[in-house]
Image 1 (tube, rainbow, N blue to C red):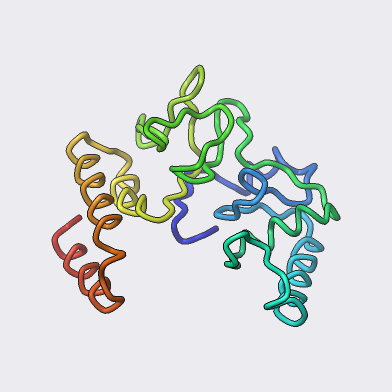
Image 2: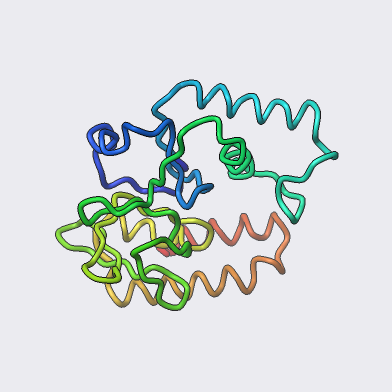
Length: 195
């Protein structure tokens, strides 16, 4: 589980719903939250990573833009098809794991490119194509990390949502213009002001 994932489910119990798979990813490549039911998957993943950095770096591009991330290696693992892959974002009994607040997934509606999250009794839900979908986790990638402190409290008021939208706009607008040192200083100021 990535540090930007908030878990709202007993994953040990819930893993029983996915016992027939060797491993599970979100949308087939997102590893913000991964369930691994077969230790051979870890060995296969390790072999892909070591092979890339030993033999292929500079010779192969797993991503069109030339970058490499953990998701690049999960995509390669999926492409090889050696293990039975399941989809962690499948809706089971009205609930799903989140692939990312900006990431489209079956059965969940995006509004203006983002999942609309609301809480019932401290539990997160997303707008679904029919009934609301209980979210077993929330993956706060990139600028959506600003939501995490409100999600941790189990509510998101309209005022706090506006604060988050402002912070996301400021980050997306000004971050590319700042040096690394200035970005670090800005993060400290933002943190101290309570955003």
